[in-house]
Length: 406
Image (cartoon, rainbow, N blue to C red; front, side, top):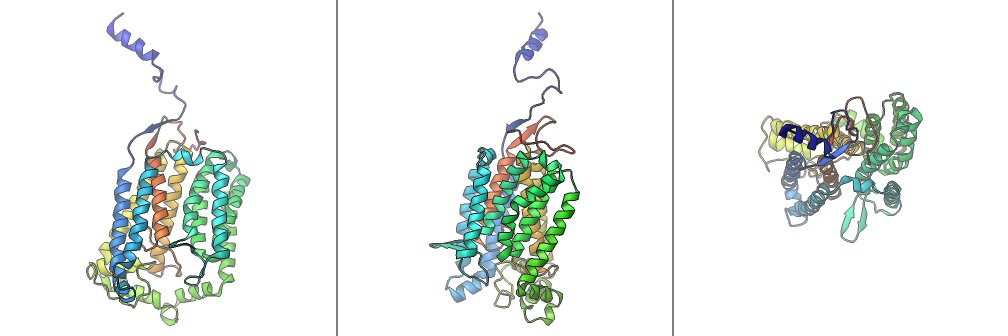
């Protein structure tokens, strides 16, 4: 036997080598390094957010607390903790979170329990019951619900993908998660809208059906109108949105627009904002993008938006190449979460949509928001470490959607 023949015979005996390209029908996960472009983008956005929080809050911090870095220090603690957890999750196997059959029920009960406790026992802050106080730590369960919902939907879709090929299966899936949406919607309509959009996007990607989304859309619009009519202040916000200059509640919107307009093309310079000097209420929170425009100008604002687009594009690449449907759905949920939240925040700041409290991801002040966003990024990075091999793998690939290989 010649050397070439021996080599060919040896290859045929190896268990991992197939004799033809079409023979390997089983999805295979290949572990490799994570997507470091996402790590860079996330760390940069968090760092940029800390800089902007100090810039926008130093005046009020020094005035009211005698410490210009008051809000910066609080945000930095949550950001550092979130980055540590992100690194841990990125190095872990994301399949751990759906390994047991009872995990889905446990996540569901914990999420509903936290939201219920918030409605019953939470202290009133800024006119709403959104925060739970445990000793010195205060956190917002609705931010926890965003990450929890993405994981739960990813697990449910991967285990019930055949049911989702039918209209009743899609409606059933939406109905299962409706209690979470309603609990959030009672006190926090803007977060309820974000959660509803995340749910609809993930279900839409997982099913070839289009008709059930017409029904769900009608139900969603009806529920939105009901929640708006239920509270008078929500109707007042719509009136303010239509005529901010003539409304007594339009000061925040008008001052935000003044900040955007005064920035021009290149801005006044970092730290040189005038609107943060008591004119714009709480500029380090949801209206921070207006100060970005004032200090860094149109070019700075466009630069931030481009970074978000690149981040979402990387998420999409991960979803398309994930090892299975479960991983793909986690990445799709992250796209919906970050994408819609950026759109809503910038829409509010520019008065494109009515005023509502949605933070700008990674940049606005909010410890719970940035911490759980980083937890979500850790899950996405974990998904990025496993790539599908073979055309029949379980990720989203063109026309086929298959169930979780596990």
